Length: 275
Length: 310
Image 1 (cartoon, each protein chain N blue to C red):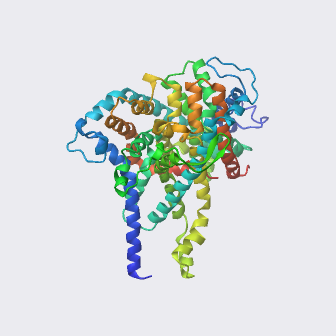
Image 2: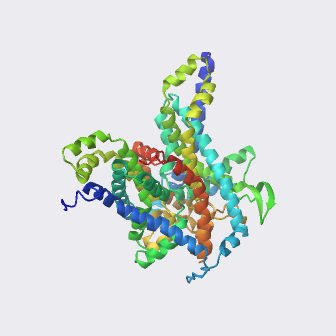
Image 3: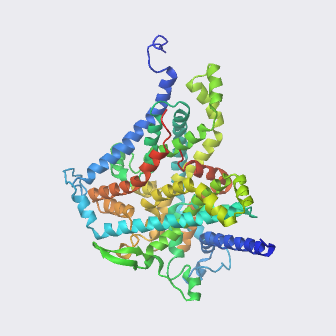
């Protein structure tokens, strides 16, 4: 291979990467450019033009619309994340370190719940939530996300704990530690990374979820994604406000990704089933 | 606690605790996954198509209605082509990007972050933004029109290579391509991350040895790297298939059912007919069809991936 053709191959590689990077950044560019424009510059033909001056009024307006729902999403995502992570850790501990006859089949049986279209449980779920008085409440949504989060959190912790060598548990057992002692003094202290990975993954998914949110809650109980959808569906709200709203709604998970992206990717890899 | 029981019991105290740890989750899964699926199946065989529940037995009436329904037939067509195009796009783009980024590129983490960040977003956000980007009178057409092309994007009602089949014209709906672009924009990062991890797991010696034998870079990829990545492709196909078969939020936010239902999918139909139209039995039947479509992919995969029981 000659050096010139090598050079051109390299150039071509960067060219492709840069073009694709621009394609991936295009939506962000449009969101930012549009949401920062003053009102008199909002015209569809000017969609791609940079603003002549920075104006935050569409953010103010979007936050007026989405603010309460934005808080709802936090009230929902934080407890649901913590609870489902805890249950997942307990299940993962048993399914990786206390295997019994049939435990792999049981695990597969749990895991299936991760793939079902939630439409297939939605009608009974709403009847059930209505019966126990949790329909149209954040608590109802927390409950739902904890239950349907079980398969993925169990999977992630099980894969995570599989990497903790059995010898460590064995030596603790010789020292007299039992099931709970090992969990508390060996497994949990080693689980910090696991909890970070699972928590990021669950927080992102719950924050972004839409189907449960739109069917189980109404108006003032709705999380931010439903409110954003309502905002974009209404004809009277200008699209710069919609763009500002999209940015506000996306910001928490984007920040999580920017700060803890490494763990986000680990979660992605841990959550993609492998034997 | 029962020291005297210990000898006679089949399980030790620790094993009882292990079962205690697992039991709440198992009970919840049995009720909320398997029980509720059965209940939905039961509703799909009932006459509950008004606001008042009516569980009288209807047989397969709801299914027969759906399979002769113009909207549902369109949905199945759209679901099929969306799934094929979406998975194809994600795998092709993800694999190409992974190969490019694997080769000691300057600014690798910078590029990787750009391709991965849409994964952190909601399909609702993606839908809201791409609705504007692919709006035929604004959006990317602002650029494309300088080259003389102005696609109709998701408003296009044409069906490519269409022929009459049942109630519908069977073929690739052009409007679906817009949904594929938006969803591939969001999910390509998934395939990229998986393939990149896979490529990093292939020992350098393997490539080195092939190079020594005089294999070209292209041959190394075709003969050595790609076969090694096969299990990863299987995982990506499974994860993407279960997303595409049940897709709802992206389309709901971006286009809705579209004219002539060119962008409608079962998830959207189920939502509208159940929760806006009170056709619960129809909705349940759609949900069961969706579940079966996903199960065809997932069940064999999960079964093969199950580790041998001890």
